[in-house]
Amino acid sequence: MAIYMKLAGADGDVTEQGHKNWIELLDLQWSMSRTVRSAVGVGKNRESTSAYVSEITVTKYVDSGSKGVATNAFVGKASDVQIDFTRVEKGQEAVFRTLKLTNAIISGLSNKATGGERPVEVIALNFTKIAITDKTAGVDNSAGSQSVTTYNLETAQTE
Image (cartoon, rainbow, N blue to C red):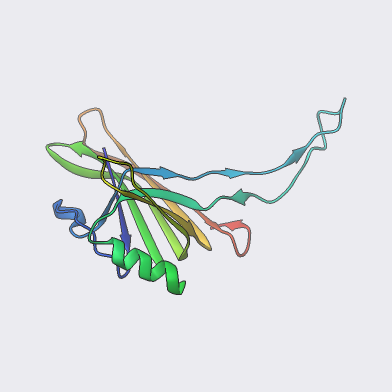
């Protein structure tokens, strides 16, 4: 499995046909939560807050895309970002999950280097909307169904 990110102004080193010049990611973290209050002794009438959507944090090697990442981080340029999760399907990479971030801004950039290992960058992305597209595959790896979930943080609504 590979994870690739397309960020405007930051061409990476990926050579895979469907993601040429994208940035390869080593790690991605993201979560959502909400506070739910339950009164003791009452299983009904629970109250909850709006969803808390964390920033997406990704880790990548320092590569040819690093200059563009740093430039975007320093100037706070907002752009749409796409992140594709792939798996091998019928001898080639196929996307099984896509995250599309609207108005994404790099809110954090840190670098880490350890002696003898390739340096990495950790990037935090803040965004106003997230669309999650999942694609299933059949038993024989044939194309299955597709589902999309979109959450707009500005309106606190799904679309």
